[in-house]
Image 1: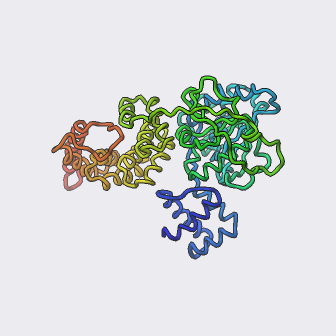
Image 2: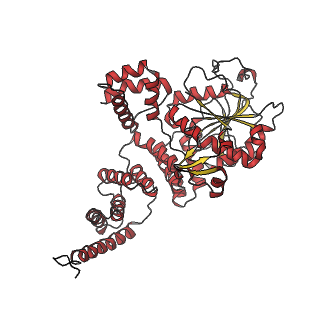
Image 3: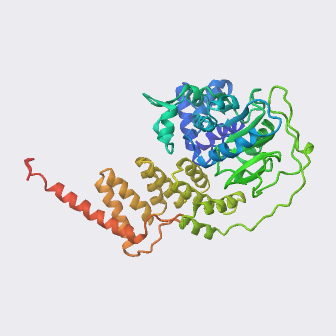
Length: 500
């Protein structure tokens, strides 16, 4: 089957840049089987011929492959910095004419651009509709239709204040619908970031959001997209990526700066924050790119037209990973995140850094961001006990019990002595009233820890929520309760069915 997938992977990568390797292969396989069946094709060979000649069928396949997990006011610290500092700075630029133009690239079902508009409305009031023009683009036509309707389930509101939801949304049968006056402020467009030309109206932006999208592209594709964004921005502009992506995307196209603990990219030098700790400097020359817009526009000066004085780059030694792990154990998450981002930017001990950062994100209930990083680890090492345990914990904490069971089972198969996995399996089975399975899992915990209370669980980097001794105590206590419950159930009724 993997050989059959190869041509589809190549076709999809050439079309839109999506990487479908590792665990993403299963998503591709399911999408192909479903799409081929719906199209009435006898097999994947016929289906490939179909999508090569039928753009609509190809688009339907792409819709099944894109990941659209998001929610309102994701990474709120970044949005706050944008609204309080970056937007006023952009509005104050001399020579400004017309509204400040913002693009949300890879907007999915619309939560990001709508969050921006609500935040802008909160700060600027009714003037926001005159001060700002917000475009949003995504490859997936179906998800864009959902975005235009603006109807969302309660899951999209995790972390959103109830007062804000009540102010901008109305309850409907399928959840909550965003008010029409907010919806009309976002202009949605079909947008393929690898298209040779972009629609003519998508140009001359002051600010581009490209958050939690770059993870799906390889290095060369990300460089290409950055160059396109460079050309789409005005001479002084800002590019914002997700906080877990930014340092790993310092690709020499933009200057990377830091402000209030947040990192972002700038074009030009006017927007460089006064107290920024410079992270990188734009190179003195940049490959000249062909324009990516259809209509003639006022071309931003190239780097060669904008003299740049070379600045020395100070490269302090990379953080010690064991010391970073200790910061995580001590729950000094902000310090740990800064050092982990430096390690990830340098591609040093990448897997361990991703695991530790995933743990911090899970601790903050940033489940989608953590899952993205864990998927990267599992693509390189499908048997990482740390990653398998965290995938299970992520599902468990989101009350996705069946999925959690699968991840903890994988961890226990990978490392039969992983008492953390066995204990979590036991807890879930107990909550599901599967007494026999729960007892087997608790007994596995007792078997492993009764002979060695300092036994490892196969993980190398992540903290343990429960020490081995406490885990053994709880497992034995639950075993006793389950046995007592079973004995009571066995003697609660007489043979004739009457109560004893």
